[in-house]
Figure 1 (spheres, rainbow, N blue to C red):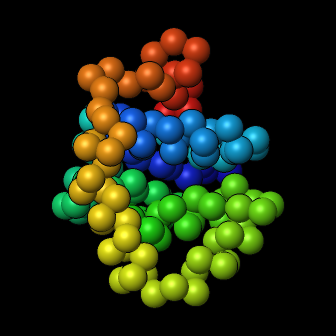
Figure 2 (figure 1 turned 60 degrees about the vertical axis):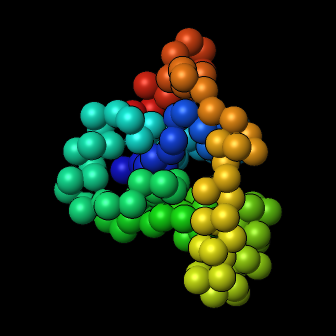
Length: 131
């Protein structure tokens, strides 16, 4: 089975917290976690014509999801109660959800800070085993 991919901003504290949250709940290890500053992402970005990278990006079964759609798809992939949350929040139009996502994305460094080194990219939290 091909794993789905989660591309994230490794300089963003909110993004790092979100990836840790997802990793903890991805018991079946069905997801790969790849920083957007990696060579893997650069290749992916060119192949899939990704222009906007100020968002989490989720790749599953040949489809690329960004912003709130990516978040919802990840919830669905986690299963259980998270899958129920996917169905509950999917009733909102993506334009509405994306506007909320954009407001958080624009302010995420100011609200949550940023880091120069990715805590998930080295040591025991390394995502390299997943890439």
